[in-house]
Amino acid sequence: MDIYQVIREPHITEKANIQKADANQVTFNVHRAANKVEIRRAVETLLKAKVVEVRTMNVRGKRRRMGKTVGRRPHWKKAIVRLAPGQNIEFFEGM
Image (cartoon, rainbow, N blue to C red):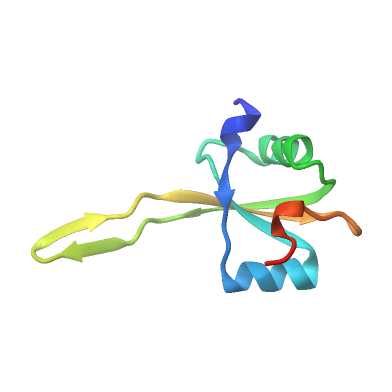
């Protein structure tokens, strides 16, 4: 898989901000077919940060209603990437 398709967007939540401050971990929404090796390679190449560990999880989309119609949000994959001590990603600084 192309490294430019692996990382979709950063996943910014209150929990992700706490993990960034306490454990130097950043969270990304990634392509559903990406594996840990591809995620590590994409972060190290594109964001130029040394990766220590990658954890992934598949998140099921929630059911949503609009009146009588029942729909579903799409399933997606989340990756929690732990960076080496002293490493940071410029995008997350100042959040």
